[in-house]
Length: 96
Image (cartoon, rainbow, N blue to C red):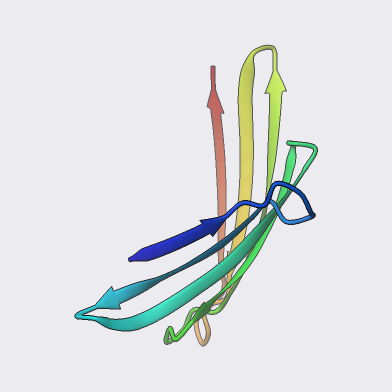
């Protein structure tokens, strides 16, 4: 697995990520994605997986909030899985 991350200091994109899987020197799959963070509270994400049998488009969003010293986080992601049903993921976390 390899990964390259670029986080520009200005502009509308917060991070651009490219990665992939390598086996015996051959590139098996490649991924590319971007994230935009608004007001350090809302995150919007999108990406695509290339050269995979079923996977393709990915998208998601996140919400971060600090309440009385507790950091709370809610994330959702959608993954297109070709001939199978789409995958929806939810996560909730908190820290103090």
